[in-house]
Length: 121
Image (cartoon, rainbow, N blue to C red; front, side, top):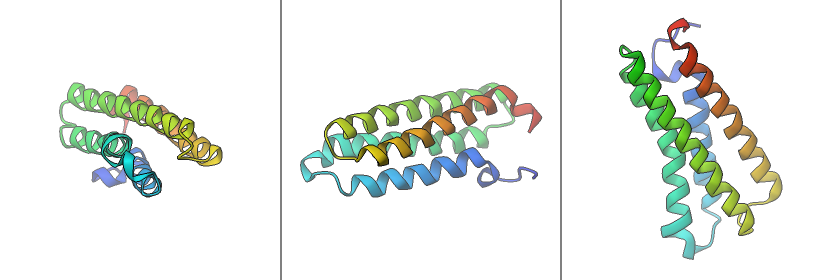
């Protein structure tokens, strides 16, 4: 399938879906976490999609696109850290954590592959 817009990238669609899942899950976190863990995890999860899209907008410059994908990968790893903290604080069930962690691992692998092979797409 030809890539005509950012939403055509599977990696972007997955990052948006995951950001929305994180948003939904964090609604259940305790109110005292609103300005700490909730804020941090929502920002990092949203940053993944934002960096992919910003990089896509600058795709004429492969090094710039790759840099934004690398930033998105870093935000993905940050999100995984916050998810682990949420698990250890008993804000997430083990099953829910495992599912999100697995999806973020998949997303990271996709971003890494895209960074290395962008010119082929």
